[in-house]
Image 1 (cartoon, rainbow, N blue to C red):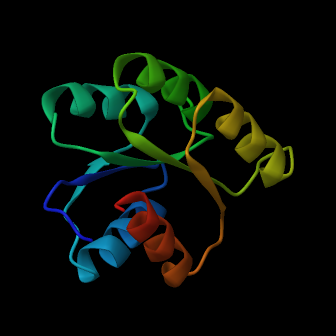
Image 2 (cartoon, rainbow, N blue to C red):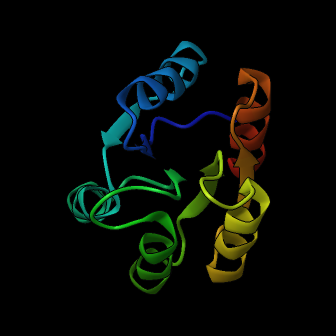
Length: 125
């Protein structure tokens, strides 16, 4: 069930962030964008209607694991989707760490639009 509550997309790579927002918006969701964890947390504090956050894990300033940990303390009701394509480690290592600190679900990049929308639909139930 779709809601009018915006989904916060935190991703430092602008083209990927925009692609995720486009997928969500084409399916009827509103989005809010941030380019790193600090910016994302600031937006959460200003936009209390956000109920779902999609966050990359490897970002400048505040990376995703630290951001998820802080989000869990301040906004325990928000659903978190952690995404990662890896880095020097295989993506699953980062995604497992994200689950350990409180991500509700994870998604490995690259992913299909249907995978993302299925996860969002499930979190909205």
